[in-house]
Amino acid sequence: MPHLDWSQYPTNELKLVYSTLHAQLTLAPELMDSELMADLQTHLQKAAKADGVDVSTHSQWAAWLNDR
Image: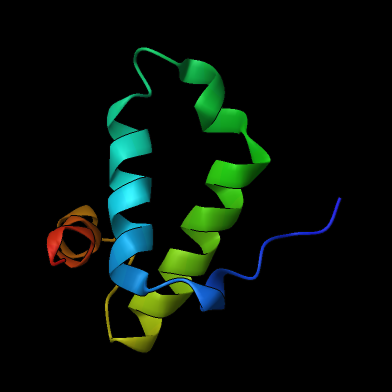
């Protein structure tokens, strides 16, 4: 299956989609193992790293995601 070209979407929209899906993990735990969620997280983590964020530090990652 071809992967989405995440670069065609504004990063702020992708942050919102990711945060919304992540907030639903307790209601839909199968999202945790979905390819879509993994690919989106990978793309956003690369963008965050490019912005100088240490994505292994939860507080930095969360602050970057919530800065829409």
